[in-house]
Each structure stands twice: as C-alpha cells, then as structure tokens.
Length: 556
Ligand SMILES: Nc1ncnc2c1ncn2[C@@H]1O[C@H](COP(=O)(O)OP(=O)(O)O)[C@@H](O)[C@H]1O
Ligand SMILES: O=C(CO)[C@H](O)[C@H](O)COP(=O)(O)O
Image (cartoon, rainbow, N blue to C red; front, side, top):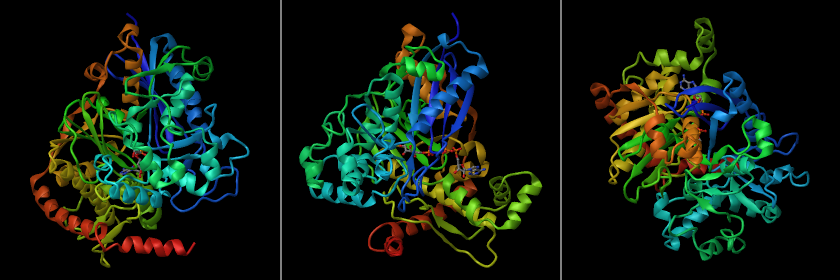
C-alpha cells in the first residue's frame, strides 16, 4: 500500500505554517511558513490613516488565505508527494480570533464601505480593548448567579467572543447590525476550504460560553447585558456546533486550485493551537499538563470530572479529546516578555557582544544568566507585561521588577524575567493540583523549549516536576494533521478516532528535564515571595496598576 499523508496548517500570531505529515509515524516530511503580510495590526488600519486605540490587535483575513495558497504548494513542491496520497487536512488557530462576516461568508473588512471601520476587521486573540465589557459581563453574571461562571474559573476574559462582540455593538452598532454572524477565524478558514460553515465545539466551549448540555447562556442573560444582545446566540452565533474530529467537508474546486491538493480531500473541523497539541504529544490521560510555550503559554489538562478551579480559562467536556473534560489555563505573555526586554531595554554593549560572538541576544543573555544560582540576582518580577489570564484573569494588570541595585546586570534582569514566567506557571500548576486535578508531569511544545535550555531547567525547578519535550517544532500542525487524518477515516487510509491517530503519530523526545533538588529548595522560597506580590498587586484593594492605567488613559 502506498504511504498516506495529511497536512496540518497552524495559524499563529505572526505567521501560518503548513506541514506535511506521514500517517504511518507522524514524521514531518516538510514544512513551510508564510508570515502574515499585514502581521498584527495594532497601530493603523492597512492602507489607511485610521489609527487604532490602545490594546487593539487586528488581522487581515486575506493573510490566512495566502498561507493556504503559498505554504501548501510549497510543501508539495519540496517533497514531490502526489496529492492522491494526501487524504486529509486540518487547521488550528490562535483563539478567540474572531471576525464579522456577511450572508455570503465574506469578512466585513472586505466591503469597501466598511473597511475604514476598525470593528469590521479580524480581532486577534490578544485584542484586549474589550476589558470594560468583560468586567461588566463578569459583574452581571455573578449577580445573577449564572451557572456558567464557575466553569470559567469565575471570570470571563476580555479576549473572548462575547466581550469582543459587545465591544463592537457598543462602539460600532452599524457593524454589529451588518454582521450576519460573528465567527472564529478557525471556523471561517475551514468554511473557505469546504464551502460549509460549521462551528467546532472547542472554540464554542472555551471562547463563546457554549456548553454541551446547556448550550449558550439564556437570552435573559444576554438581555441583562444589553437589550440589543438578547437574541445574539440564535442570530449572530448561530450555526451547527460539532465535536472535534468531525469532518467539516471536502476541499472545493477553488481551494484545490489554490493549494494544489485534490478536490474532495477530507477537511476536519477547525481547532485551537494549544488544544490540538495535546494528542500530538501523545497525552490522552489526566495528570499531564501540556504547555504550548511561545509568545504566550497555553496550559491544558485532561480530567475525568468537572471541577472548579480559580482563574482557569475554562473546562469543556470533550473540549480537547472526546471522553475527557478538558481544562485550559494560560499566561498572556512569555516569549513576548523576553522579546520586549531584548528589543527595548538591552544596552548597546550586549548587542555588540552578541554580534561579535555570532549569537543572538537571547542566546547571549541565556549563556550569561546560566552562570547565576537561583536567588543570586536578588531580583523578582511579576510577569504581567500583557495582563494576567490565570489565576487573576485581569488584562489591566501590568509587569513589575523589584530588587535592582546599581550593580544589576542585563543578564540578571533576563533571568528574573524567565523566572517570573515560571512562577506564573507554578500558580497555575498549584491551582489545578490543589483543587483535585493532579499535575504530575509537564509536557512542553512550541518554539521556546527548543530555544532556551536555562528556561526549561528553571521551569522544572520552580514547579518541581519532570518535563517532557515534544520531538517536533511543529506540534500544533502535527495535531491538526492528525485531526485531518481522522476526518478522512480508516476507509481512506486515515484513522477513525483521535486516540487511534495518537498511538501512531504522537512524538516526544526520550530525554527528560529533571528538577535539581538544591534549586527546588531555593525557588520554593522565591515562589512564596512571588505569591505574596501576586496577591498584593493582583487581588483586593491594592490595585495601583489599574490606577496607573486609568491615569494613562486620561492622557491620550
Ligand atoms: N533563545 C530564546 N530564549 C527565550 N525566548 C526566545 C528565544 N528566542 C526567541 N524567543 C522568544 O520566543 C517567542 C517565539 O516563540 P515561537 O514558539 O517561535 O512563536 P509563536 O508563539 O508565535 O508560535 C518570541 O516571543 C521570542 O521572544
Ligand atoms: O488563547 C489561546 C488559545 O486558547 C491563544 O490561541 C494562544 O495563547 C496564542 O498563542 P501563540 O500566539 O503563542 O500561538
């Protein structure tokens, strides 16, 4: 029998990549990255002088289509694999990345009459300008004792669908009216591939407050937010919601022409970058926290029952793998914090030294920071450069660094920032572990584990847990391809369930990272200090960060 393949397309924050994967063993045969031409739109609308507000983050929907038209033909060309052997395709996306579309499924930002309104564009997951709406949703849901709130750790995030929709209604009612539906980008791109619009239960559950048994919250709840939202669930959020692993449809003529794949190739329903990585790492049982580590971290855990955990992003039945409750938590900035330091704050002599040594600044700072013992820098940071989305769930929180002296060196600050993100992870691990959801091991994937050894050792030491690393740079794309193979099914040479695909295709490295007991002991003390600061600045009345932000907003 000839070898069969699937393609996974992973849509990240800055770029999308297509990966051709063998169904036999999950090996990646080729991959190709297409950076988004318009990147993250956070200052001005494309080809326009219209400026965006503080905390805005938009994208151009055409950039997503270009990934398909550019990266899929590139992997076909590179490998020479015959499209007849490629039986399925799946995509995964950052989420909640959402857009308003018209009756024909066209993004409203394509309409020349609407394109100058920022609200007609794709709102990226890290668009944080709907915090006021999120605050009101949380306040009203709490007052009404809404059942759904505990499933989201007590607070919904401004990153999610309802807050974003309400912001559109408040600031651009005409766009709200014009929108036939609001959709996740992962579902929209899938509908472009298949000409069939379905919503996947993963984003519906985690990002749009949909529940397998209860559906969306009641119309009364939406009405209590704003009478104009009363029917939002059955109007703007309508659409069949189907489980992960379902076949969304088959590749259309037009898309076959664009990608070079065969008409009729099976396409799975859309998925989320972090969630799709769990089966791709071979995790199909509780106790293993899967962390996708890049610009941000998404942490996912499987459970046998529904529990309440403070500040988790959500628990969704079948939300990751059918048969389990899937728990999500996350840190809104991790690699982005290191990038901020390297790009904005590193002195010239460090850049010069990195150039002379032929390494990048991260690598140089990692080398230098590795010479320090835990605690030796005397520094401690709060990792809230992009707010906090677990345990505190508040995008108004900001970063902090303490302990500096006139002797403090750039590599010490870099190390303190690495440590701060590890302490952020420890808060999440403890929140799960202390609420009946054991976290025994960490499974890590994404770009960061391959880039920074020191970082990974710090995570093992701070959490006092063994870390297993993905044997792939493209774990989400591998997971998406696995779901593509499930959409095709065993009759076409794929798999019937994601668990079957996991057994054959998931890949992790043999080598593990173990905690070093001496480091664990010191980090335990530092973590207690971190926790004190975390609670002081993040809870209760000491909200100096919010006051600073409020003052700032009056200056614009
Ligand atoms: N050597 C390094 N050490 C720590 N962070 C790094 C290093 N090199 C790059 N980064 C950070 O990694 C992040 C990119 O991670 P990656 O997983 O490739 O991207 P994404 O999250 O967009 O998929 C950037 O935020 C960058 O600052
Ligand atoms: O919240 C998410 C998933 O639930 C985001 O998709 C995720 O955090 C984006 O991460 P990155 O930019 O690092 O791929």
